[in-house]
Image 1 (cartoon, rainbow, N blue to C red):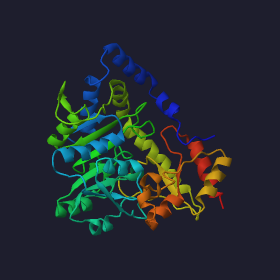
Image 2: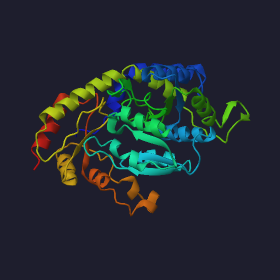
Image 3: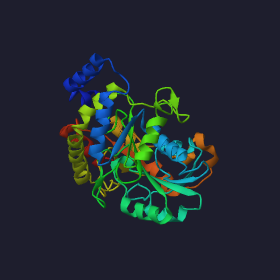
Image 4: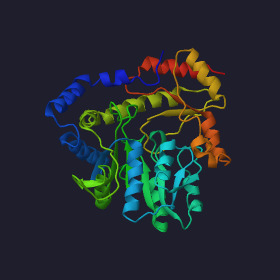
Amino acid sequence: MIPFLDLKKINREYREELLEACSRVIDSGWYIGGNECRDFEKEFATYCGVDRAIGVGNGLDALTLIFRAYIEMNIINKGDEVIVPANTYIASILSITENDLVPILVEPNIETLNIDIDKIEEAITDKTKAILVVHLYGQAVEMKRVLEIAKRYNLKVIEDSAQAHGAIDNTLNRRVGGLGDASGFSFYPGKNLGAIGDGGAVTTDDMKLANTIEALKNYGSHKKYENLYKGVNSRLDEIQSAILRVKLKYLDLEIAKREEIAKNYLENITNNNILLPKRINGTVWHLFVIRSKNRDRLQNYLLERGIQTLIHYPIAPHKQRAYQEWNGRELPITEKIHNEILSLPISGVQSQEDTYTIVKAINDFN
């Protein structure tokens, strides 16, 4: 079986360094809010090209805390609207509604699968206060145009960078995480930069925002037993921080390995019934997502040949029971994408032989 993602094998590559990092934390006797987290925050901020990175419990918390901080700062108010792509993972939407804000779903571009920038402006109303862009599957949104729109309407721009660690926006020649006003990252184990457990971070150049999030993530407190806000407990622990420090050193290498596999797929998959993704803007290939009108049959066909694939994501947010008030909405481009997409295996430990096996199987599909 060719697995979709072999996490055991991925982490085995760095086993000795990871064990040493964990031992260092265990022997320190300091497991929350120590030097490992602070050092990782500095190193990740430098990597993203920003002034601050704040470690939090997970990627959803990262986004949720950004909106919460803007509310505490009286920049955004409950009931305000946030523009967001309709075909994103539900976490993007949850971060908005958790703060009693209103998501305004905008269809994606059928070619890039990222938000259709041409449709953003028509979705703006007097209640719009922010645009949440999602660098889906590891491909950076063309942020120069988004920022120009945001400037015209005085909107905050928040990046959901959960799938795009290291991606570069070629229009600005800058890494994601440093393109908007703030960005949320996930370090879920399957990410290009993955922990061995949950983890997340917020990146920003806005020091007031950063300081507000620092308090909010720690029970609303900057100083022990003194609470400025009704905060939460969302902290990146020392073990995960130490692990991420090791893996951050190899992130660019991981991206390069994925690029080689993606290049192989793009050059050698020739089945006319398969739509391949386009390398448009600094992608890091967190996922390699193809499209087929016979997606379910293709997935079963590949599984029969020992190739595991996944669907990211089978149900659009507006069709989820959690948002049943939206179930009657028609978003045809989003629905088409969710009905056709299929993610092929891609990782830094995937062998060339496995890649060719996948390519041949897809080309033989009819």
